[in-house]
Image 1 (cartoon, one colour):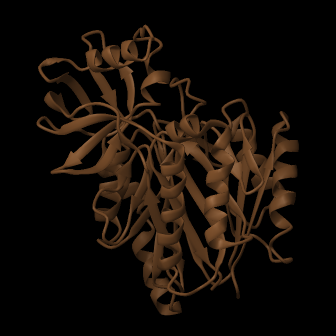
Image 2 (spheres, rainbow, N blue to C red):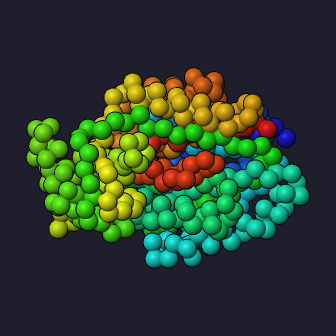
Length: 395
C-alpha cells in the first residue's frame, strides 16, 4: 500500500469537539485509507488525556501518542491554545507504542521499558522487508533527562536507529509538561512509537542562529546544572545581557527571557549546538534542558529571521535527500520554542520554507523545549534552538 498522511488543527476549547474537527481535516488527505498511527500536539489549555482518549474513541483502528506544547502548527498555519493532529495510514508498516514514567530517576531502565517490544517487532519487520526504522519520541520537556534518554534509546534498540521527536512544552510557563497515549498521560515520562517501514524516513535539522555575545567558558558545572561561567555565577551572564538590552531581569522572569537567547556551544570554532536554560537556582546557577560539561566554550545566541528561515529550508532539503528519490507523503516538524518567539509573526514563513521543498503535502508539528534528531552521521541527538524536519515517504 502507498502510505498517506493528513494533518488537521482546531482551536475549539472542548477536547472532544477539537479532536473531531482536527481528525476530520486530517482524514480528508488519506484518500479513504484508515489511519494506523496518529500524533496529537496539544496546548496545555486542553486536557491532554481527554484529547488522546477522544482520538482513540473516534478513530479506534489507530494508535495515538501526544504531548503538550508551546505552540502548534500545520501547513494551514500556527495555533496557540489549540490542537494539531497528524495521521499516517500505512498498512505495510509496523508500529509499537510504549510509555515510561520517571525517566529522570533511571534513564537506562526507562529506555529498556520503551524498547521492550523492539526486538520482537524488528524481527517481524525484517521478515516483511520493512527494515527501515524510526523511533518517534516525545519526552517531558522539564525533566532534564531528554538527552540521556535519546542516547540510551540507541543502546536499547540498535546503533543506527533513527530517534526523532521533541520535548513537550507548556506555552513557556515552565511549570508542567505532559506526554502520553490514551489512558496513560505522564509528567516526567516519555512515549515512543517505533515505526518499521520499507523505505527510509528522511531527517534534516538546522538553526540559523548566531552568537550574540563574546565567547565564554563554563568554569563549574555538573550534569545539566551550570554553576559558573567565567568564574562568576552563571545567571550573571543573562543579567548583563538583559541590561545591555535595557531590561532588568529577575530569576522569576528569567525563563521567558532566556529561551529567546539560548546558550550556543562550540566545538573548536564551529557553533555545534544549543542548550536551553529552564530555570535559575538560588545560588545563581542555571538548570539546562541538557548536559553541558565544565570547560565548554559557549556564547548566547540570537537570530536574524532570514538566516533562520534559510536554516529551516536547508533542514527540509536534507530531509528530502534522505528519502532517496521518493516523494514525501507528509512532514513532521519539531521546532524550538525560541524560534517561535524570534520569528514571531514570520513563523508562517518557516512553514512555507518547508513546503517549498516538499510541495503541497500535509505538515504538522509543535514548538518544543528540546528537539531530538539522532540519525546517521549526527552524534548530537539532543538539540535546542533547532528546527528538525522528518519526511515520511510515499512508499
